[in-house]
Image (cartoon, rainbow, N blue to C red):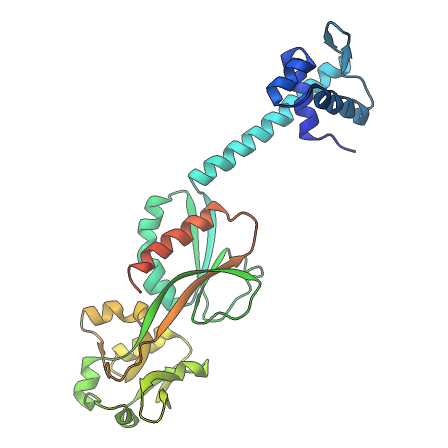
Length: 298
């Protein structure tokens, strides 16, 4: 059976304080408790560390040898705890983040400069995937998920939400006209997604139903490809504000069928493995991202 830090601490304190009673006072324990800890330690080591008399304590030869090791062990523990405290105050280390490429490009990358200025000792590793990844297999600390979350063993933290809008380039609308009614979309080139098919149901209000299932003239697996096609004047697309906010501000894309669009929001979550203590580098990243996105979405 190996020695415990409690037993090592009792031994060192008794030596430094000069008596079991004084050591007990310093440790906030009873004299009998410290005495038992010392006896357990000697029993595990199968040797006497201290010769005890009613008037004094004296280290044995084995006690002097063991004392230096005990001080080293306790010192290493103190240093490790101090480093963890510093790390909480000044987070550091590699942080691996995964997100779909559109979100990474339009929502995360613009914030990297400010994040690195605030936390210079964190090494960001930004990876993109348009499919849901296994965090453990991909050695990922945090993954950003867009939309409704599936049941999972992962812990999820909401970061914000962004509205969906129908958008098109002015050049496209000049050539093909601006649709005034939902049914007019049948005469337009619509840009959709190759998967999942649910993304091809647009949040549009119709007399007979809510939601408009499109037949794409062009489709892509990536939202960024859909955006680029829309910017190139290839048709009308339905995209989240985090992708098109800047495009609409500079007039490269304009919203269409605004009155017929049902207000629909895409939720953004960060997911990570459940654990008892969230690493400081992960916690500060989630706090920072959540604060920044709250000002952009709703």
